Image (tube, rainbow, N blue to C red):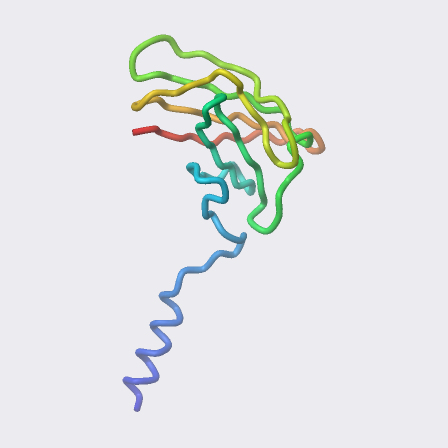
Length: 123
């Protein structure tokens, strides 16, 4: 009986915990954390879209100033502004990262001035 109770307790303790909600991709992209903010980067036909959430709800794109820093596998590194589009989505139209590119989303929360970064690698 002791072992069965201990095994059950170990299973409960081994279960994944999401204290700040989920880090699942909601739009089919790559997800990383930038401080307490979930950042999802999605390549689209029109460019790159970036979505913000706090794990429980979407965060309005207009609440942030953000840049996208792209380091291609071959070529020059460049930076572009992420423009608020709708809801929690910002966009960098015309940016098409190729395989091997590194993308960094640099974020400034307009209300607090807090700066954070999320780094993504496209394979």
